[in-house]
Length: 346
Image 1 (cartoon, helix red, strand yellow):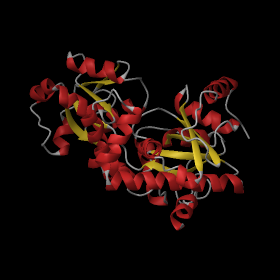
Image 2 (cartoon, helix red, strand yellow):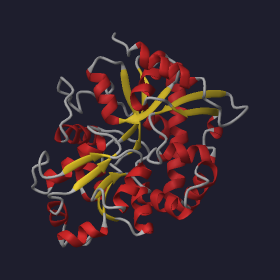
Image 3 (cartoon, helix red, strand yellow):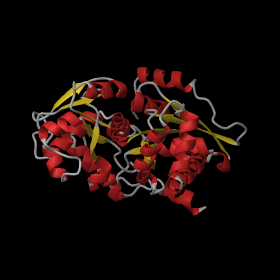
C-alpha cells in the first residue's frame, strides 16, 4: 500500500510532538490532528470547551498540524494520531491514490463558505442582497474575487458560483491571491478586490465594519451544499477492535457537543470564545456559530445520499481523482456510518 512522502511524514511527526492533552487523568487518550484551526470544525471546539470527552473516559490531544489536510492525513497514515479532522476533498484525493482512509463521522454537514462583496460593488452593479439568487450570481461578471491561495477551495467555490449564475467561470470573473483572511478583509476595504469567499465569522466581521455584505451563503442557498460531509473525521484502515471502541467514544463526545450547540448555541459559543478565541469579538463568534449550527444537527451521520452530494460537488468544481467513486458502493470502504450509529445506541 503506497504511503505519503517522507517530507509530509516529517511534518506530521514534528507537529505530533506539540500535542497537549485537553483533559488530565482520563482513562484513555484520543489523538486528533486538525487540518486547519478554523471554527468550521465546530463540534471539536465545542467538545473541548464543554469537556464532553471526559464522560466517555477520554482525554483528547488535539493540534493543528503544519501542512494542512495533507499533513494531518500523513500523521494518520504514520500512526502518529488516531483520527484526522479534514476536508472531504482531501480524503477523496488520498483514497484515489490508494491511501487506506475511511470517513467515520461528519463534523460539518454543509458547505459553510459565504460570498461577501463590497458595498461599492453592489452599488456599481445595481444588485441587493435581497435580490433573487440568479440575479445576485449573474452580477459577478467582471468581479475580482480575493482568495488566500490560488487553485484551492475558495477559488473553486467562486468559479462554481459564477457558473451557477450563467457566467463563464474561467473568464467572467478574476481571482487574485491576497493572503490571510485579515489581508483579504483589508483588500476588500480599500477596493483592491470586489469580493471574497470565506467561512464565518469573516462575513459578519465585514458587515460589522461596514466594508462588506454577505451576498450568498452557499450551504443555505444550494440544496447540494446543504447536505454533504464537508468536514469529516477520518480513520486509517483496517480499523482494529480497540481503535473501533476509541472512535465510538470520540464520536459520542462529538454528538454531545453537537447537541449542546443546537440546543444552546449562544452559551456554547460563549464557552468556545472564552477558552480558545479570547481576542475575538464575542458577537462575531456567536453569529458564526449560529450560522453554522444547522451543519451539526445530524449528529455526524454519513449516508449514501450526502456522500453522493459531495462527489457531485467535487465533480462540478473540476476535481479529478483519476477514478470514479460511487457513494453507495463505497459504504464501509470510503465511508461508514457504523460508529455514528454505535455512539447513538448507548
